[in-house]
Length: 544
Image 1 (cartoon, helix red, strand yellow):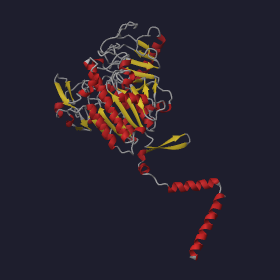
Image 2 (cartoon, rainbow, N blue to C red; image 1 turned 90 degrees about the vertical axis):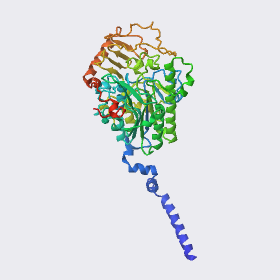
Image 3 (spheres, rainbow, N blue to C red; image 1 turned 180 degrees about the vertical axis):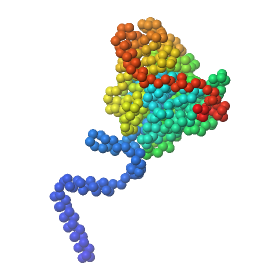
Image 4 (cartoon, one colour; image 1 turned 45 degrees about the vertical axis):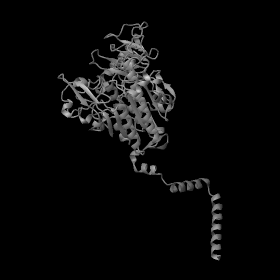
């Protein structure tokens, strides 16, 4: 008992002594000791342990004079959604009669990109997305890649998927490729994507996943085109592709390792022809008398519903708050396939605004001006460096044509882009060239492809009045100059009145020509080696 009291007394005196000494100890020294103890006693979370074991999931970013740990949590997941052949007037937030509630909600919560430009057709735009290079500089400017020509996105090009994969991202493509398939080296899983679920070519049927083409020798051939990576997926017959792509994207998200950032490139088949949609999406459009427009509207709503399911999957995994989502079309809509670009002039395949000014928006908690409309210039090549900067990667703008828009999106800065190259192709029938500098747009030699403004009625092929147009329809070798800020519908040709601007624009076009590369389309003739009969009835690599 005496021993116990003695020990208690000693402990009491020791505590009192420590308190007295501690109170007289210098404050700075006390803080150092406290911080050292807390640091040594803190146990890392499982996520921190995982991150510390994997250098590829960490990035140290220098901010001023201090270092900030930019872990996987701060690198956004990136969801890049591309609609195919969607018109300017085909989304609800642009006043369309088509119901797109999911897209409308995302657009209004995010930043609507009112001056987002793409190229006139599919393959050139997709090459720009994937490479950050202007198509005319890499030979990708001439039309879409045909099924029977042996080329694709040049193999010396590093894709955005390869870049993000090197930074630790999981990379997936779900949907349409259309960047070449004659050799397996051109296919997605050889170009930086961990997985590909979708198809290689274009214009296939949504339910059968077959496409018919006429070969060089005149034969019409059918081929199946649907794959999971390199494996043909035969059991997709009768499954609507829009539904299939949503389900696969949901599966990827549900099984994703949360310790890695995620990049999903989701290029839908919709709303490209042929016009096909499950009947359930047609019921709400009985008021649209034009059959093509009615089916097209159903296809848009089906895609909108699919996007809603994808977003729900991100939210279920608690990924959504850290997801940067971009939605854009690949080019303007085709008026003869149900689409509507009104009030813009022209259609898919043309350099008029209706063919190149794409409906687009960006969404994410990291945006500075969310809930607004941006009139800043952005081009399809710009997404490549923008995604890289968002991921905390080193800039490579000196090696590509794209300009990062990340500071514009995340900090509200002005766009650094002042120039748009719509197209440069010396080998097209009329030698097409068109550029924009600030508000000025030059069409150097006219564009005869559907130069009209089409109505917004059910019969969307009705031509509106052109009584306020100063010129006859475009002619070959006639230059057109527009102030597209003041005249976005391209009705007033100022080429005669503003010769100074016209000459300045032509001089700039001449400066761009030394970097021109002849189209790969012209360098690779047609062949019958691609015949699906040689590959078990499937459009397949192995013939170049």
